Image (cartoon, rainbow, N blue to C red; front, side):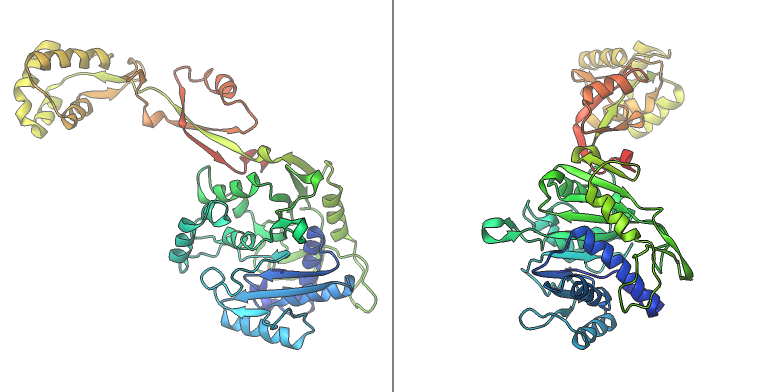
Length: 465
């Protein structure tokens, strides 16, 4: 299955420029996922008007005459679906079975290709589209998903469902079983920067990236030039995702910086002012010759070698451990007439105890709450008075304030943490956490400690931005 749908929302841009855009991006995506000769399937859960589906088959007929590419798409927009379905009928399309290549419906709640797997996916899911309408069904799927399913990883925030499309595609990846002639799947997806960088450790987006990277499925990310799309000028990225990396790529992620590989358009189309040169025009094509910038990007990717535009990292380089750094609570005690009255307004039944405490401890300021409360406990025991936990909490809240010069408040075998001083460190997975803490934290806050029970692993590390 080849999944397509690049910038379908900009169909009104129209004309030869629109078709040229589809062709240049499609060529880049197909070459990145290395569609081979033979019979293969390509699917798109958000195919829009189907332009990418038709262009995919046209490209394969022109460049891989012995190949058969069966394209399938689905869209919940009635007008877009009608256009795509009629386009498939009018054009030369390879059908597999009943010929129902394009289906109407919401891919997330009414998957028309349920249970099917596909060889290739090429897609540009809509940027920043919310999924409130499908939220109930998608959350239920996440909660019931088995651990090995991409739906179990997490869910992105409701105002941007881009990563849902990737999870949907991965759920349709073919297994890797050479004996059964199953060789996995490959996908090239165009995203904005949001799916790559949004969400901290423990959040939905980070957990989805974690699931993909820890399964060694993210092969490469290609940063594209800005101003490449009709309806947005933001930076975009191609993710190359597969469940069957070549042996020399296993355990690694390649970053290709193609942001300055472009040529200006003779005439802008909406926000689109740049294009990627597609090389010399083939025979019969009336477009002018262009520099082969698609080939340049593909060669950078294919070389898999570090240089000025290409970096190669281990999977673990993209991850970090979010460690909670705690510092001790320090309290200064002092009883005043005003605070005493305020306490007794809330607990008048403790008047006699308060009088005894006031007489025994006096009105002087004390910087050691541990000592103060120890004396109060002895006094209350002698008076055979037992305070409930809420009363103890109220007393401390009323008569103490935080003071950096005070002694640390003891708690169990250690010290009570001050929530206002709590901080976090994002420590690269390859770093020794204890060594990092000793080197980067303790010299600045020597009374700090780590609460490792709250550790969270996140992807990607902000260092990779």
